[in-house]
Image (cartoon, rainbow, N blue to C red):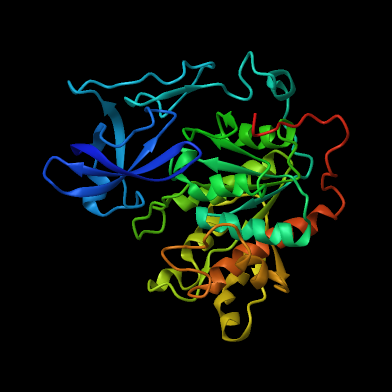
Length: 378
């Protein structure tokens, strides 16, 4: 289940909020890229000895090509450093050796506990739902293009990576001001706010962070088995139910590809058809991009979802340029915007639709004076 390796830090790579990339020389003489979560272990320095988990790396699985630093060791092989003592009572990554204890947005003693104790209404808040983390910057590009200045919050579920710090994309989007804050739900951790469930995370995004819009997806590292039900993106359908139950407006991004080598993901992916067509029990607004030229046929078959959901044909004017102006590199399954434009335009269409729904009756207004908001930099 776990493959351990000892190594020595030979070089430091890029660092971002909560994470440090490094190159480690293993005891067998080989080198590997590794990632240290600096909220869990001391920030490593060149020459430090480290204990690594290399199981997924050696299998070639989706950890971004990283070994993961379990501990920074002293000369006798004992762990060094002590993270900051926990302030809260939420335990995430529960019962694992590296379980973390955090302050939950709604736990007793939190500044938001009273406001969240009886909260159960999103008041029409639009929530864009995507099954892949790579959709996030594309959704945000459209939102910023069409309505600059909206407070957009990212809610990360626990169906992919658990540490938010694994996402260099989120760190850069926060730095660039494209995200007003982040919430991590379930076993996921590391957001500006911590939530027990997607439901409480949605409420925290609106009430504590003052969100005008929320984008909800799993973290990096989609898990799939090539079967209808064995993929982590099925959670998109569950998210539709959560948003709708709380009186929000679920806005679905379709996973569309014109370049994926796997037939089940060409056009509208079977993942989207299953999640929205079988798992979602409440109605969502689904963005159907008006793709140009020969790409238009990639949305054939989406009409099968019309019995359950509201389909919106969304024009793409200006969105290609908006996607090219993102502060992060666009990539899905190793493909960029020019290799698979349908995927990113489909995600951007959902962002555009969410902005337009803000102008419809029943959608929330901009944050009123006095509504509690949180500065994510604090």
